[in-house]
Image 1 (cartoon, rainbow, N blue to C red):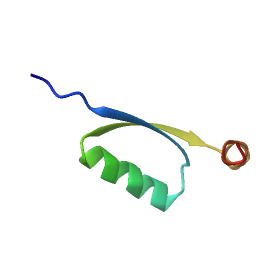
Image 2: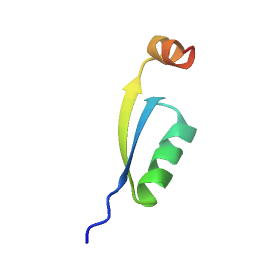
Image 3: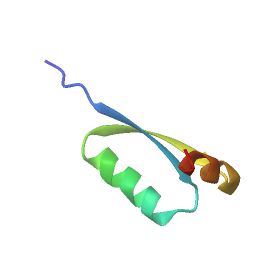
Length: 49
């Protein structure tokens, strides 16, 4: 039997150290991380939802 990996999508600034660390941590704990690097303007739009 093959275990199914949890899939997580992250929208982050490319220069954000905490986001990069979180993505690496999550990958190491058997999750598939789909990363979308966004610019500052797009990041503000996403976080204002």
